[in-house]
Length: 381
Length: 251
Image 1: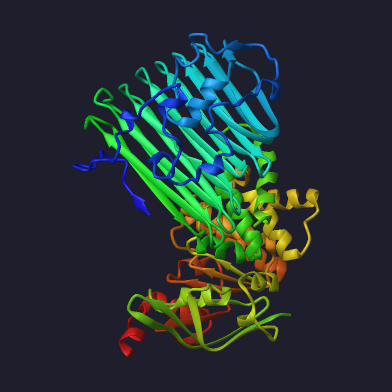
Image 2: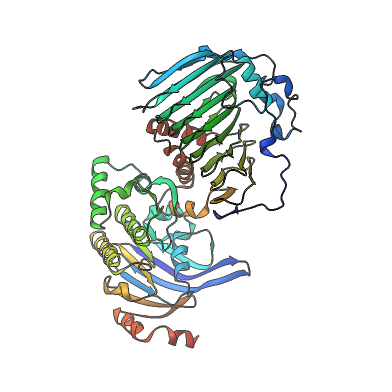
């Protein structure tokens, strides 16, 4: 386990291969070269695994999306030519650019008040036609809400999700990817936080041949806090890739990034690349990122790379930790010593390992349904 | 009437410096309802004996036998030993994040009994056991050993012992790190379970303090991986007065 403490921390003269802030952005597919595993962004993937999401033309996805109606939330489809689309974030890779260009309409979710119940958006895929979706979530000042994006069915989807958390607003956003085994979902999230805003961002990735989420949080004003959590479980031949990035562009903000994954089966592959950038202006930053992976069988592979770029030393703390291992023998012994056989003990520990983060969503129904999904995945190879 | 027999037991452990022999021929027989105290200085192998009975994979058996009513314990997996009626109250119980105490207890009870306990009586049993150990009911929703104080961890071990009703319990330095109040509560729990279930107890301790609360029938002094002296409760009083020096000098 490589571990750096919570105290002030610097990599000294270490020069990263690519400065995170300098990554090119564009809404045009042609600005990005054809996808190739020699590119750093796609090095863990084969372009074929994208099942067409890197093409120039993708289908629309409006018909597959449904949502509830509750007081305090305005929801409507907007022409993507509207100026708010792209105002929070623009694509940094070819798949996101293709999704951006091809989604002619954008689903707008605007939270204006304090919600008494979670707002739920259901995405039900029904084909493997490569498609595009754009979602724009806006939490107005002083609003307080939980928004759930639940993906299921069969789909090949490229997506951009813009998340604007205004001054003093608090948003608990949960995305659940539980697609059919042949599905592909590549999703770019762009979150921007105003002053004293709070975002809890949770990604749960379970079903699909390829699931890739690149969530970016930018602190645009001081005094805000983000908690980015992720839970994933890869079975045989599944590829799950998570690339969270926190851009500390303003002073006195706090970020906690915690991703936990389990792997079971031949060629189960997970990738976690966690980037944190502390800009010159971001004095008083407090950040910590953690990735833990639990390998349950031989033949599975977990890549885990935390990156920290620090441009000011005037911070409260910056640290990261990454550990991938088999689950703890002492935990196994403790449970076995209480009569629980090895397989049941493994299940209990894995459920414990992963459910802990899901419990932080404060959504008991999601925890319950995902427990069942996890039990099923534990039984698979 | 059950019987746990440890016969000429030898145990080694792998270290960075190679194989290290820890137990060197231990003989000990415990019958139902008996309380045996094993006392000895640090490093004498007391905890190794506890873990070897429970089947921790770190320890290799080099000689001897452990029999439970004539059945070969050393042939059993860790969970089979628990199902056969052996219980180890651990000195350092590990944290199991994400697994709640209530879920853990129910899973363990189901495993030991071979069937799920009847819900209504089970909830009452857990509640009663927690009350008698003076544990907050909110405890059952916390994750196993996570953020527990030393005293809470030990009460949680005794709670499991009460609910799982083993034939024999090994208490590995259950008294360490307990203040007087916690020690009394934990000791009362052990005495109650011992009495109600006619449980046999192997009480491993460094100090005589716990023996003011739990009265042993037999005391064994453990030095350098074997039993150096045996006797009744009077031996504990002698150790209290004289310490372990004479055994270590003799060695």
